[in-house]
Length: 639
Image (cartoon, rainbow, N blue to C red; front, side, top):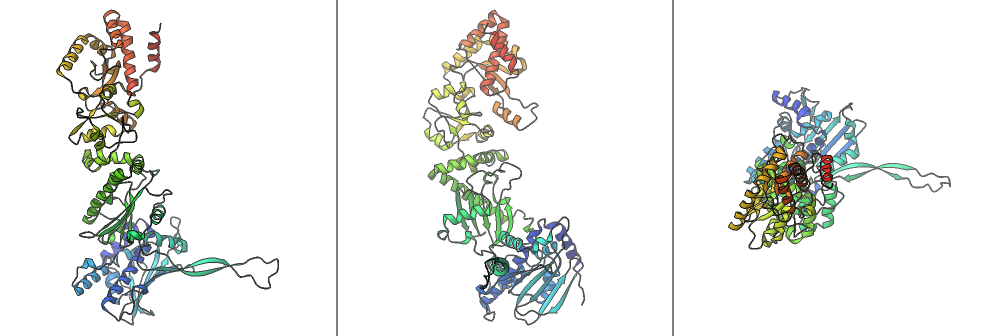
């Protein structure tokens, strides 16, 4: 018996396959089962034009046999089988696609496109993943239309043999002799009925043919008729043939044939969530790219959602075979919370199963799914507001991050979904709803950022806006300041912080009065700057205060809220501090007292300056630099 050698490039590929390409050894069974399904598909297609096949689709099956004594795991099918030449061509040359050739041959014979012949993989590259768990692999096969059978046998890179053999019927047995256990890997697990069942359910549950296996169970023996009172029940093991896979994916059933309970059960079991989903979405598309999708919006935020450990992505299937557990390319970052499956025959099953790269088909599917998800969320926002508010509570922050991603390039994709608390709508309002409520006299969409919505409405800066009857958005998420700057304008209406001096348009008379106040207060403002030094950029007579005495704002692109956010993130704040401006109300009693002290008692004026500065810090939610010293200053005024 002559041992044949793999071609040099194939031998190198095999070494790479075993040691590098597949990082997850358990997928070997998926590959072997997919190849068996291919063989069944080929004979099923042949039966459409060849009445000599004598089988219909219901006769085809895959059977798994576990032999612990001999450490073998066998996958058998009654598919089309292979000739000696096909064994040489398909298994002697790694990455030689037997299935691809079959598709092309069938298409040429029927005058059709090769894409219309549904073969899910190729007997070649994936087959060799068996060597990750097996020390020896045998392929016993008898091709359709022949009485001869052949045995291909290999122990890995040392080569292979092909000899004539016996097989009673058409089909193929892949017999894997499982490796001995090592300290790093317990290969014996792959001879466990439980493990095999689990792998079939995980990776091959939706293969269209039944995958059967004899499973061992225990039962109590019948009680003998002559058993006495001291008889103790005895147990025995027995084997029963079971079908391990469901065969019909839920997403391929007609929508009317699937109940809400089935959808909920599928979601909770498939994605390990104890709470039913907030919504489900079915997508079926045929055209340049065909696919079926079943998507879910979870009812709560996963515990690890905002950690590095969280894996976004949809499960990607090809004709019922799982090829990726988390295909991140199918979801944009702002919809990373969506769970579900996508099944398409248009993704090639080859070496890239474990290293799937960006493809045109995936990009098309991802773009379509993004539109469908957004449409469903907008429908929920309009028709099921309580449900949408629940969604927003769980995932609104992630959607907001989408508005600032890539420097705001994606903002238009999520703009309609954004919700905010406001002075009129505690439960949340969209920008469009805010715009629809604006009185004709209102020029801007107003907002203020901070940590607590209840406190934001009490800010000195908010008073003049609210007194006009204008609504203010209360933004309490750390990313909100960046969101507002990213959006800039909505429906031709500028978004305006209540801290901006020009937040309320001024008449010429108001401008003139403000200039006169600033001029008359120049001495006070200069004194404040001299006293407080680098703590502030400047002091100014405020245009945004009404009845309150003081507040802290910022000049330049860095706001106070941005500074807080960056500090929390541990950023290097060198050169990144907000340029603080101490604003005073020239009509307040506190300002009058300060002005009098500047003119008559400079030491007392310094105390007033420090007190007003620290009050402004407190109102802005900033830490007081020296609380003890501030307390002493306040107490000194009580003498």
